[in-house]
Length: 365
Image (cartoon, rainbow, N blue to C red; front, side, top):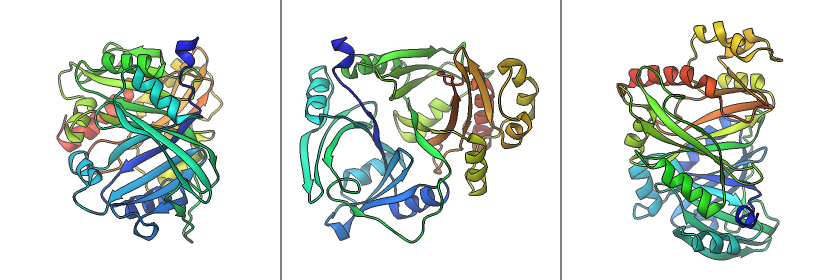
């Protein structure tokens, strides 16, 4: 048991995006996704090289960060990757111990443990590198009572569109290059004590054109789930290859956010202009034969183009946005679980065909 419990993780602390214009991106996540303003750091708070906006909905915290100067690692990251996820921060009780345990097991250090202090208390941060330029920051905030962390001040604008019912991060998917999936599966097993929950290969996830392989890694309390994707041989370019080409390497592909009323959440997101992948009518002709009895009205699900899948524990409802920036890279998933612990394997073919239609429109298939 020691092997599994050497790194107790309490959940996802925050997800940080490096973007070209944080002020405008923050406005988008408020207006389109219903995130609420929490905290701000920038020139007014003594930050000379960056500005960051902290937004929250339920237990999901996004930090939207931009460079203020060109000679900045943030600016360099953005130049290479475009808008993308830099940090997947993990909430821990002891950031010093988390850093020591993971670096002792072979992780490359990103940030040695450091306390940061203000009048609201102390936060201790440390961090390690993972795939591509992505990092995990360990956050120990048990002795902190401010809005976010030292260096930030409360951000309380008048403009606060209502939330859309998003509750917590269900999982975050990483795309890695050819032949790299098992290396990163081993990394999460050895370095962070994760276990493999499920795997899919190109026989499970393929269409006439594209294929991928995926393994889902989870921590011991199941609060952190990281599917890892790599491309597989197909007749044309898969969405994973397209991502890696435009992101210029491995990175976080999408954040899945949970709701307990996907019909209400998707309906509201569509009203606010969030664009989703188009699921064809033919999908709904056979889906009930596959998933059997569900609580929801299939006609409403069809109208909103929501996908349905079942496993031995129950069923789930899910839908994927189109990429939320001009490079076809990062997107979001909205998911509601009715007992199901899986990841919508039965939907992969329909999902990929919808993605391929978008790729064809972009000329990147």
